[in-house]
Length: 283
Length: 147
Image (cartoon, rainbow over all chains, first blue to last red; front, side):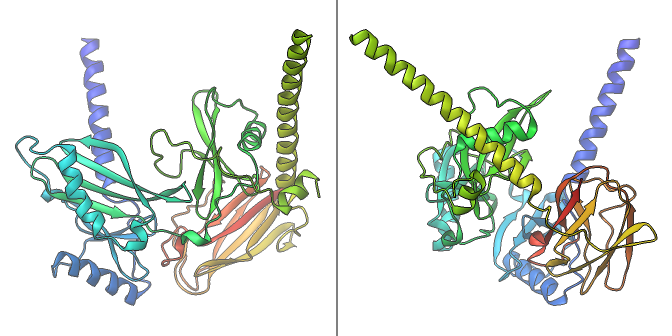
C-alpha cells in the first residue's frame, strides 16, 4: 500500500513538473515593446508581412537579441525579427508538423530541403557558416545546423538551424542568430596559451582539470576564449578564460552549442600582447 | 656512450617539460593577481551619508552612469537607481542582493532604493533586466566590491 502511495506521489510530482515546464517553455521573458512605438509597430508589421496575416501578436520574447513575435503560443507559432533593420531571421510553426504517418524522407533529402532555406540567407552570413554533419532527430523531425566560424574558430551561439519534418517534408522552423560583430572586428589570435588558461582556471577555482580534457578556442562576443573543464565536487563544469587577458569569461555551462569533435586552438599562433607581457613582467 | 646521450636527452626533455609547466603556473598566478587588484586604483563610489555609502546609479539606453560602481566589503551601501529615458531594470549578475527583485521595472522618474551590506569581495557585471531596445544586451557596467 505504501509502495502504491509512493508511486502516486512520484507520478503526481512528475506530472506537475511536466505541466510547469510545458507552461513556462512557451514564453522566455515576455518582454514589452510599449516603450518604443516605432520599434513595436515595425516589428509587428515585419512579422505580419512575413506570415501574410493581419492577426495581432499575442506576446513578445527575447532570444539573444532577436525579438520573438508570438501569434499562437499553444502551437508555437512565432516569427523572429531582428530589431535592427526588422529582418526576419527565424520562424517556427508547430501546425506544420505531421499529425500522423511515418517518415517518408531520409536525412539526405531533409538536408536538401534545409539547404533551400540556407540558400535564401544573405551571402555574407552564408560565407561564414559551415554545415555540421551531426544531425539531431527528434519525434520524426530532422534538426540541421550550421555554425559560424571566423579564421577556423567557432563563434559561440552564432549559428543557423533548420527543422524539417521527416513525414510531410515541411520546414517547421529556422533561425539565423544575430552576428554581433563583423568578422574583421573579431580577433582570433590568443595572447595566452591554452596551458596558461588551464592553470588560471585551476588556480582561480582551486580545482583540478577534468582528466584528458583538451582546452579549445572559441569566440565569445568579439574575443577569443579558451574553454577548459574543471572537476567540481559533484560534477564537472566549463570555464571560459579570455585568451586576451586571462580573465574569467564564463563559468558553468557553455555560451552555445559546440560541434562534436571541435578542437580548434592548438594550431593557432599565440600573439603575446604588450598587455600580457606587462602582466608577466617581461616588458 | 649512446646510452648516456639517450639518458641525457630524456632528462633534458623531462626538465624542459617540468619547467614549462612551472612557468605556465607562474604566468597564471600573475594573471590572477593582476585581475584581483586591477580595480584597486578606482575610488569608492558615492559619498558616505549618515554612515551609509550612498551612490546614484542612472540607466539610459544603453549605458550605466557611473560605468563602475565600487563598494567596500562590510560597508552598508544605498544604491539609488533611476533611469534617464525609458524603462530599465537593474541587476548585478551573480550577486544576490537581499530584498531586491531584479524583475522590478524602473520607469523614467522612478527612484528605486536598494540598501544592503556586501559581504563578499569581487567583480560582477551590472546589467539591465528589462528590454530597452536593440542594444539591451550590451547595457553593462562593473560592480566592484573591494576588501
